[in-house]
Image 1 (cartoon, rainbow, N blue to C red):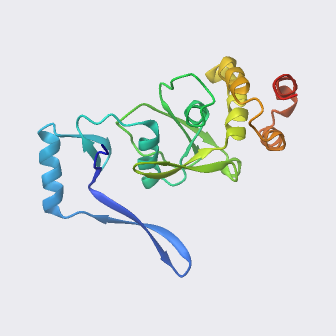
Image 2: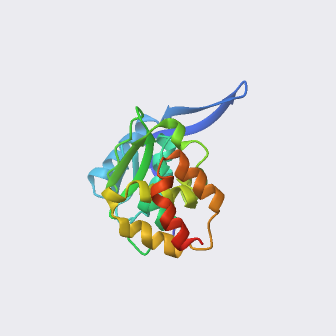
Image 3: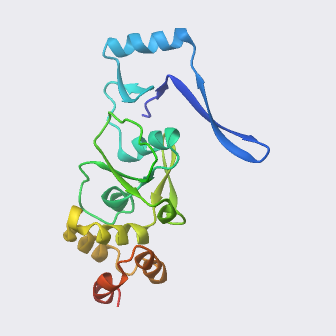
Length: 200
């Protein structure tokens, strides 16, 4: 059963003269007081500032990512979390991996550990697909970009993560897209031997 999410602030998208923008409206004082009373009574838990769910709710990474995207549309699920979303790993992420353009602030999240990876804004262009959860949409790196990201950050997350993902995705990825992502992340020469091994 889907748990209702309670917001102290309501976010919506409005289009004015062809330009979409996010508009935040505050809930009524009476509703805020009701939510704070439920929080104090242990009936609700905080997910993020201004965002609460029932206290016994166990949120998935996809649900939390949807709530993050609601407040920070520049956020993109990446690395091991993206591997898990694309079913390219047997690993269970111990934190939700989120990519953000440098200079963009990550909202506070209380529901689970978050690992933020800052990158050049241009490198997040044209490398995502839309994901969905019961709480809305979010963006996640494509399978090809996810695999290349895992190689790029192999010294931080472990080469074994990349090798397992390469094996599990063999025959399922777009090779020209893989090459494109490897070129723009400047790892093509180093990753080529693995491409030849797994994607020959």
